Length: 238
Image 1: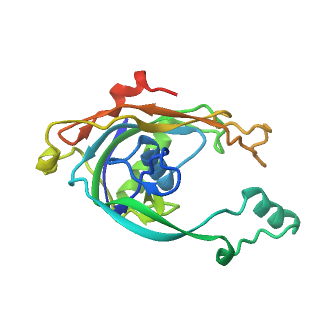
Image 2: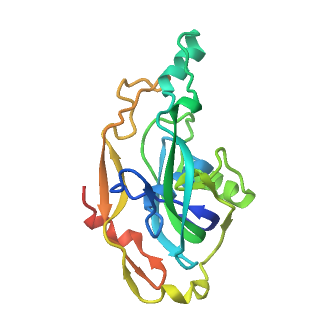
């Protein structure tokens, strides 16, 4: 059981990891970025999203922007400590941490995403855990435009304008500029975390996860605007 959605946005940035200082986007979305988008709609430890196909409808256009960022972030554990015990001071002053960075980002984007989810066998809040149950929840949320976090395209400030559930993609809408075979080079597929999604302290009530992960890359081709992600899973490289 799978889904097909069309996602549009004014801007998007799928950052190339080899660019150390300034943000530079890939030409197309990475599977992990699209998985993150779906998690903004619905997520449970019991399911894992898998991207099967990406359709790029609009011409690939870049623009340069400059924006303010901060060099650090407040740690999750320090916030929990303040909430549970009233200890510590999880405060960050933007005026002291601010830094200005340039970015080369995509503009006027429209993507088709075909995906499904798989059961992970991890902890669930419900005893009646079934694939059909999660499928119906995702379907209802997509139909109603519901989400629990604002879906975004790569960076959180680049919000999605619309997510539309469709039965099929109309490939006649793909820009003529995208005709032919385009070798996209090595791209980030996703991250493989050391903990496998299971708390390292084996405590789901107060979980602690490992940040250690291996980057996984693949080398896709875009044929007439379509990237068949599924056929590359057997040749991804850590």
